[in-house]
Image (cartoon, rainbow, N blue to C red; front, side, top):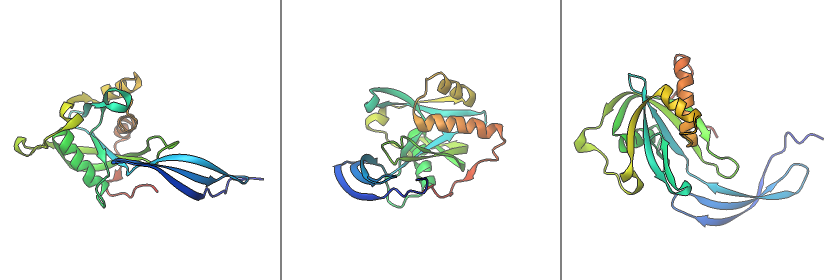
Length: 201
């Protein structure tokens, strides 16, 4: 008997941890064929990431320390959707200014990424930012904590893709964003979605 139409329903939930960025819960979930199973889940507000592409075909990469992996990673400018009601496109504009000192005249959606759906509901929307200008020096964001250690570089998009394929870039949203940007460029940007496109639910 097929179970393709089974609806996974949460019978109960126990909160294990409540933190500043994410919460951890254990859900009792109905399974196909009867019975239930326990599934731990890190509940996350979501995030945005930005491929900032200039007229020369270069993208901005930042090198930032990530404590869970114990080292610096090459990443795109990115940040949490942790302000209630904030539009993802507005969050992308904010993060681009805070982490790369840039503003964008044009913003489109490249790709949406569930970063690790086996244990977290985190969804990252990756935007493409073009028509870039620098934030004036006197209006730039004062960076603190790990952001105070940021290294910002401009890299040709094809070189960044090469870094992905060589294992030099491992951040999931950055990998997806760079590969999507290269594919979208090669397709004449026809597959881009509008900045206000609703998030997948």
